[in-house]
Structures are given as C-alpha cells and as structure tokens.
Length: 479
Image 1 (cartoon, rainbow, N blue to C red):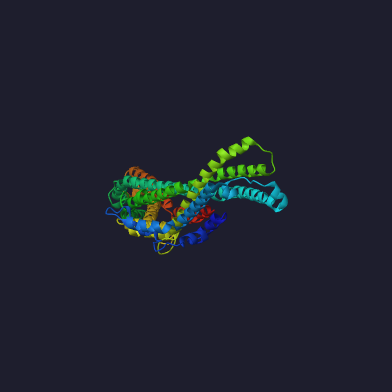
Image 2: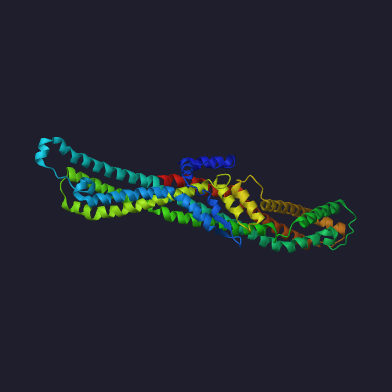
C-alpha cells in the first residue's frame, strides 16, 4: 500500500492509468442486494433545468440494497447486547456471565480440587479478552483511524490543488482575453501602417523604384499582414469557453465531490474512538490482574466499576453503530469505484454526466480529455489555444525581423523613397512598440497553454479517485 503512489507516478509517465480494483472493493461490491440495484448512477436524474437531482424511487431501491453489511453488523451487535442484558437479569443463575464473582464451597473444593481451577480459567479469559481489546484498539488506531484521516486529508489536498489549478487557468484565460482585447486595435494599426508599402510609411510615396531592399521589406510586411489577418479576435471564442468550463463546470464537479466526501467523513469519524478503546482496555487489563494476584486497591475497583465500565459500555455501543455505518459506506464506495459500463471510477463520472441535461459539448469534450480518457483524446479548445500561441510567436518573430531590417536599412530606405532623414522614426517606434506588446502577449498565451496541460489535471483526479477514494480509503475503512 505504501508503494502504491510511487507505482502510480511511474505509470503516469508511461501510459494512461487504468484502475485495478483492490480486494475490499470487489468484495463489498459483491455483497447480496436481495433483488435491489447495485447501480449507484441510477439514482441521478436530469432535472428540467439541467441540474443534478435524485430519483427518489431509484434512491430508495439503491439504499435498500446497501444495508446488508451494516444491517448484519448492527443485528449481531444488538443480539450480543440482548444476551448480556438477559444474563444480567438472571443474576446468580448466569454466574460469571452476569458479572457475578465466584462463590466456592471450601468443603467441595477439598473433595474436588478441579473446582478451584474454574475461577483461574475465567480470570485468564478476562485478562486475554482485555489484552485483545488493547491489541485491536491499537490496530484500529494505526491501521484504521489514522489511515482514514490521511485518506480524507489526501482528498481534501487534491481538491484544493485542483481549485488552485482551475484558478490559474481562469486567470490565464482572463489575462489572455484582456490583453488580446487591448491588442486588437494595435493589430489593426499595424495592418494599416505596413500594408501600403515601406515608402508610404516614410511619407515619400510608393515610388521607390522597386529596389531589392524595398521589395524584401514589402514582402516581409505582406507576410505580417497576412498572419495578423489570420488571427482571431482575441477577446472572444475558445478562451471564453475554456474559462467558463473551469470556472463553472469543473468547479461544480469538485463541489459535488467535496459534498459527498464531507458526508462520508461525518459517518466514519467515530473510528477515532480507537484511543479511548485502548485506554479502557488497558485499565480493564490491569484490573483483571489486580483481581487475580495483585493487591486489593479499593478505589481502583470502585472507579473501574462505576466510571470505566459504564463509559466503556457507551463507547462500545458507539463503536457498534460506527462499524455498521462504515460497512454501508464501504458498499457505496465500492459501487462508485466500479460504476458505469466500464466498472471504473471514470465509468461512474461518465454515467452521471450522460444522465444530465444541459451539459455543453465543450464540457463533455473537456471531461473526456482531462478525466475519462486520461489525456488520450483531443480537446479542441486546448488545440485552439496552442494554435493561437503558435500564430502569436510567428507574428512576433516577423515583427522582430522587420524591426531589424528598419534598424539596419533605415537611411537607405529613406533615400530610396526620397524621404527626409528620420521620416521612418515614427513608423519604426510603432513597430517596436508592437513587437514589445506581442512579446508580452506570447508570454501570457504561453502561460494559458501550460495551465491547460492535461497531465497535471488528470493526475489530480487519479489522486482523488484511484488512490484516495478507491484504494487507500477502502483499505483503511476495512481495518
């Protein structure tokens, strides 16, 4: 179990991570349902507004199918409690089972020495039972409660990380949209500036005589104009859609996960009674030893009888109820981890999404790319962002080349065009400003492109579903 994250990390670098259900998941998923459904996705129905609603009939049918494990544990616990109560009511007739001390007839003990062994046997059983309580409490604490807390902490950390990543993506998209909106007029000014040729830029007409320098510069300018005209309006289109997906749709998914995990965590929190179980078991163990061979400490036995035992009884009732609840939680958890047609966590998400109305095409494509297909599909909005970045880099490189040409050949071009010295300074300044703006734009678009990379987003969902929810969590709850 400890090596699992390392193995998963290595697998991520090689190929898509495929969920391999662990033994507890398979076992709890296969519990008897007595004719009721084990398909947890059947409880989700599409509302008129496209939101998530629950089908009450399907929910009732599903709940009835999950109560076997919890019901069996609770019924066994209740039967055990009833037996203790009955024995207590029987009093001396139930002997040690009613908590009564042994009363020995010395004359009979002298005749049958074997009678004196009975108290010894029961005292040994009491000490062994107390030792078992201590051992199981320690096992419960380190294999159960501590691991459960870590599992929920891992899920919480992963969801918080995703929210941070989503925030980065939204900010990067907003920055790109805002900068693109500011750049649209600049793009149009550049087109107007260089579209009519270098000599018009210098104020000398367009009669440079067709020199090589003029021809080469005008060819560069035409290429820039063509590339600028290919660029979309940066303030609209795919960036807005991409921002909306991560600011709304993915955010709703994470909120749903947090809501369900929070409910589950509330039910399994009673596992933290492990500490008191160990303490009470140890006190009872000491009391058993003192009652057998140790000195008689009246205050110790009074505290044990009137404080420890009542508290321990209440604690045991809480533990019994908690174990029943955890059993049901494990059944539900196994149904989530083996959900949908593919019987994987991804299948569970797919089934929920397909049952909903109003989910956009872009949202489904994003879910397929980032979550369901593990980066093996295509996401058109991401491709458009990458294309935008490539085009911006090309425009920036072209502007760099034009500015280098102007810087080197400004005097020659002014002479060829018959313009005054320094007549290209204004145009040159505008192009240098444009180069600087597009350089900044490339940096911002690059941040947006890196923010929407699939691997780190998919790895967060692997951490939540494959590792915490469907591997470490079930192992911990099983203990």
